[in-house]
Image (cartoon, rainbow, N blue to C red):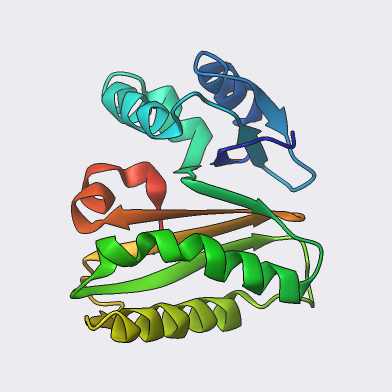
Length: 179
């Protein structure tokens, strides 16, 4: 699926059930990576809320879906350099939401092994965002202890996605599993 806007990690043995649950909300496709589904939803954040709303009544969600990650910003890339260029461009939209906040970037990489390092790319984007905040005359701080926001960066092959989640959203939606 080339036009996904949600990445779903499923528990071992939960593939069929997860797909059945998710297909109620939009097209779902198997990826080239173990236990990873890709989804295209009209509003993937609404799907996250719907799954959370069903969570207490439908234990099948917890037994088949390990993680549901909706994406705000999507991009493609062919090299590590292009990946960093596209990330810088896309993450700029988050600057107004990061003013005077404590945050960090969390990356889940699938593919590009040996070409992209999740830790290096997280650090790269953290530093880029701090620089952009300083240039805008505002502040921000990188922290992993009780952050105000976490920026999720997902890659599946040569496609990437970014989302920003607030502390309240992280507490509200356990299916995000960012840290």
